[in-house]
Length: 282
Image 1 (cartoon, rainbow, N blue to C red):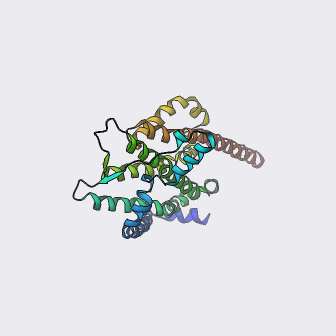
Image 2: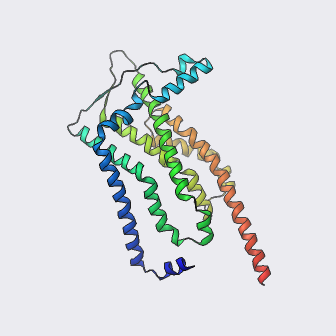
Image 3: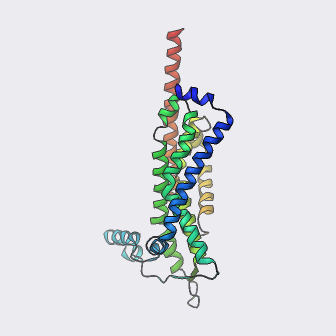
């Protein structure tokens, strides 16, 4: 109760001042992580960003082991593929160094950044809303990192192997520009992290009454089309990447239906308890 009374006493300017400090701390965390990543650029590019271009990358090893178990060695065991990177622009390498440092800084500091956002939003919630959302920071951070991992360990190596091996003529040599590769790498990894927030978005939209499990089941076919469109937007224009990002989104959509149904059941129980309490006091 004291938190709510303090919240009511705060003026609009006080809210802005508080928001400003949350933003300042979040930006500071991102910048600190970005500077550290910038100074370790050589190691990061060699062991993280360019790692999915190596045939010894862990994903290719897993696929090959799966091929030996299922007897599909020729299909799942990726053969060595040539991968050459060029920089055709004068500022290409420096620009990609800054971009990669910023993205890595944001990914590393994301749990803290969202925690700062949650600290600002939480005082405005009711007591029961705070209790029901107590694991919000963990859930959002977990899903974000899960999406990042999916983009890095699944989408990036599959995309790299597909395009590096793809050829319509022996005359054509695949040599990729650093800006093209890093931009695509960032779009796949960061985009996956954002798209994996679907269950959280559904949870809060159901809480405020904008979504219901019945609505989601009724418009499941429409959702599939939307998911395919989103997959086409956040991934390179090739069917492989779109399918790879769409499949987990389908699964997340189905999981989100169960989450929405759970929220609706909890709301009904709460309404019944409040109705019984009103009858007892009447």
